[in-house]
Length: 187
Image (cartoon, rainbow, N blue to C red; front, side, top):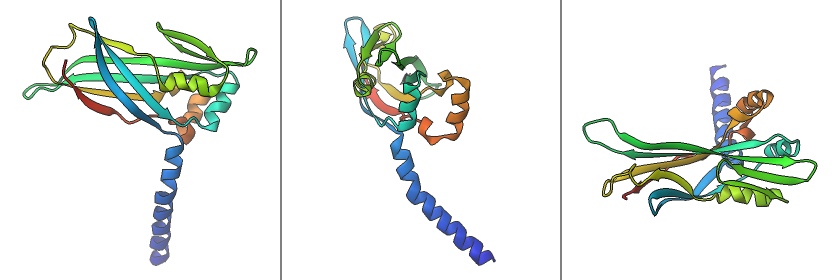
């Protein structure tokens, strides 16, 4: 009996190891580029992403329910004998929606961008290659200091209607997120 149970658990573990990468790769976001550019008196974040948009998300859009992608950035100045200094911790939300009457996709980033697109691929391109984002003034970062910069993007399920939030907890298709991408920056 114990031998059968251990054999079953071993087979189950092997099956999960084989199947898991196939599922996780279908709803993944990768950060291709992330860098800070200084322009005049501000620091701007330039990013580009790769994203696989699965069928469940596309169907949700086609039914008129908008999706929200949140990009987060943290700039940390490490200190040896004290807590790390965090001069910048910001997030920006990008909204993608579909208008059933005009059959157009709309992308909006508060304060910067509002555009309509005729295809989903064109609209996703605006998410994959967002406009530069002002993240800090020149007074926020000290010249010559080394900073660790972290960037990530995720599908913000908290802004979905409540029934979809519940579904998102149980469904792997709704867990679209990148890992933190860390790099060093010296102004």
